[in-house]
Image 1 (cartoon, rainbow over the protein chains, first blue to last red):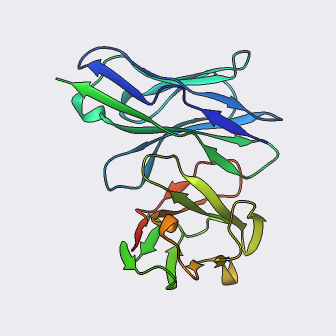
Image 2 (tube, chains in turn yellow, red):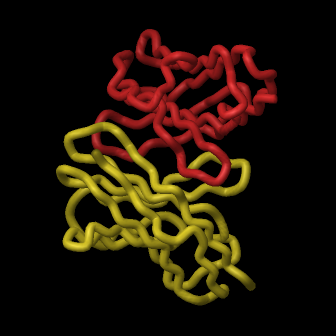
Length: 113
Length: 113
């Protein structure tokens, strides 16, 4: 069975400071990893993904994430947060041998001006 | 390209009534997902189709929920009879066969009173 853990319900940062949202995963095979963002009353929007290759992947809106196989983590990062980054962020995982896409519980990010 | 279309956007029904949601995925996407997102939680996969076949429905409450994807294109999700705990946002998503990201519709917000 596959699963995703987002250990922090909330992350609060000041605008201009680095932002990190944590994610760890568990799969039986090789993982496909994704980050999504959800704004109020909106559907989930895709940010970035790791399939294979370079452990550091870059995505939309200046976000990036680092795949760490030994720590089974895929943390989302942004060097300088904006107030407009305030939203709900979800990490998701797929097993290489399975089409099923499983989501974490989400992390609410608040960026204060 | 057009995104994932869902209707209706909002629905209020009384408990024990029935309701149906409709989803039209992105053209050419073979995989279609229905997720249930209860307020404050991450999306929970209800059912996943690959073309018109079911890949995973292990978390679908089959005594009251049903879904179909005739002709491998659009899909309907039905609840009959509805319970208060079914109040949630129902998200439809689609993806190319493998191993790409899923694209989400805006969802249907169901309130059962």
